[in-house]
Amino acid sequence: MRELLIRYLLGELEPHEHDAVQRQLAESAELRRELAHLRSCFAASCQSDDDPDEPPRGLAERTTVRVAESDSYDALPTRERALGEAADPPVGALGWSLADLTVAGGVILAVSMLLFPAIRDSRDGTRRNVCQNNQYQLWRVIATYKENNRGYVPFVQPNENAGIYTVQLVKSEYISADDLVKLLVCPGAPLADSIRAKQFAIEIPTTEQLRAMRPDELQEARRKMSPFYAYCIGYRVGQQYFYIRDGQFQTPVLCDGPGTEDDGLMSPNHGGSIVQVINLDGSLKVLTSCKVQGGTDDLFLNTAGDVAAGYGRQDSVLGRSEATPGIFATELGWYSNSPRPLGQPLPYGGRSAP
Image (cartoon, rainbow, N blue to C red; front, side, top):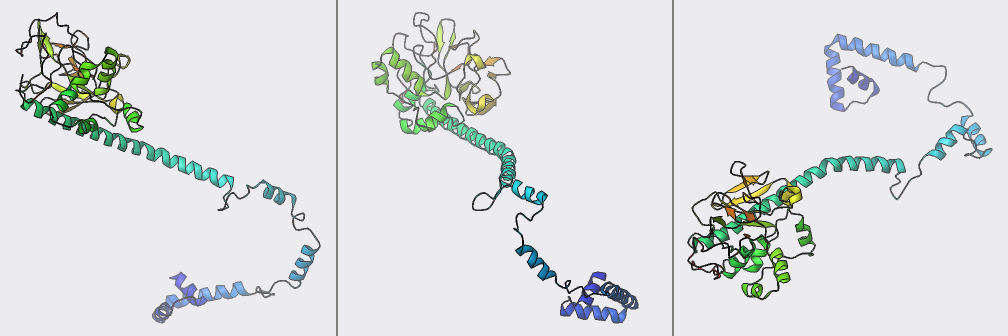
């Protein structure tokens, strides 16, 4: 209330405020005493021999003479002049000094340190989701294939590479080569940077082209068929080699491609921290190691520690595009789940089962 009384004395109140204060003064003796006290304080502070509103006589004339008789810069005290010389000159159209720019740069750096990890995590999460979607779409094509081939997934013969999956799916007309190439890229893999920079391209040859290739050309073609993912190859029991077929739904059929032996074959996709696996029934698993089935079965190695056909149905092996079952025709007699002997090639997919 004292603030209102002060403003009342100074004449700073709005009309409605002025009327309200007057009504309260009329009703309250205490407020009237407070107002009288404030008025006396104002009166005491204003008492002076000289009028405070009037400057000393001759001040303007004396100041003008001093300025005219001296160089304004040289007349400055030494300390003030030194401080002026030490100050950073304005920089740029905005007149920022070097100190201003340094402070602004520090603020920007601090903000970027907070934002960049969140942006990176968001980007990595998006790429991981795209990779999951690509794997699921690939599984759908593979599932359609096996529905028309008595439950078999694409065949990987002993002398073929795991990337033959892509050749068979295109050959069987379950998907076009252009559409398949889009699904074969994991955006969270290091090689994806080369794809985005157009320094590397996935190439899916035809069966006729594969048969006409020289050994060195075939090796390069196998590497480029599907470098981001790994596919299940068959397994052996004694002297017989088996293809993967429906009936064991938790069998891994497709996953992120393995790394090198130096990093324990852990997939380099997604920063080398996880492996995304699609099972035969279409279920997805996200593993933090290369082990499956309670940590006993290695995704990329058989029980002998080789990148080759597994030893038994429980020993699933997923090989990168250029990996083969590692079996020579002279090792085995007949395919146990095929009427064709090893000497005869099996058909590349087709809509009728072999």
